[in-house]
Length: 206
DNA sequence: TGCCAGGCCCTCTTTAGGGCCTT
Image 1: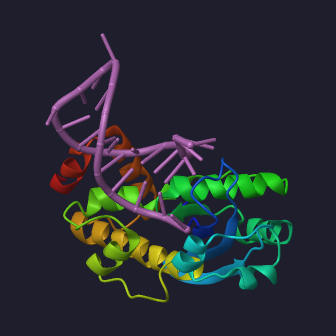
Image 2: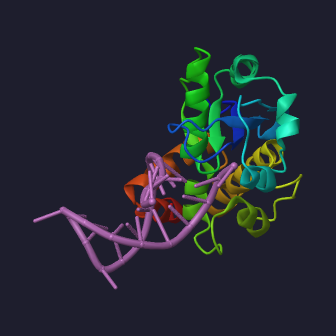
């Protein structure tokens, strides 16, 4: 995979926690990282075809009246698919966003080919001393600027993208690895899966 | 009525259980 690989950081607000249980996306935010910098963005509300409950309205600040005027998934997801292109995807707690993206793509006959990396899994390895690994906590811990309201899709995607860049910087500064940040993070994630902490120690000792 | 997600990761583990994180 190319070092210059475009990355898209994505975040969904949804009607609930279970994509497979029928919950739907109500907002998507996506931020492209190109050449190590934040570039184009994509954001829209999505009409889920149903009422969202009061918890979701309160949690996200997205009301039913806002969603009533929003485009539906059949309009939104082909556009998102085009925006994402062949970029590697990143999200905070990626399994959640991946399940929603794949479920919504399936409804509009789109498919996802590229890998989906998780900023939370990397942060747990890179910042083990953080109070916790919620996005809001990590934004503060890594001195990432707050770009908007938490629990809105574009703001969360932007701050996840900035956290991702901060983690890249930490890796470069901490391990002297000037190049191949994407490969490094992919390796770091696979290492996390394998619980192979020795890999980082070996890299640091080189 | 009662139930209500799923994947990762750690540990008092692996023939399991529970916390974290996302909305």
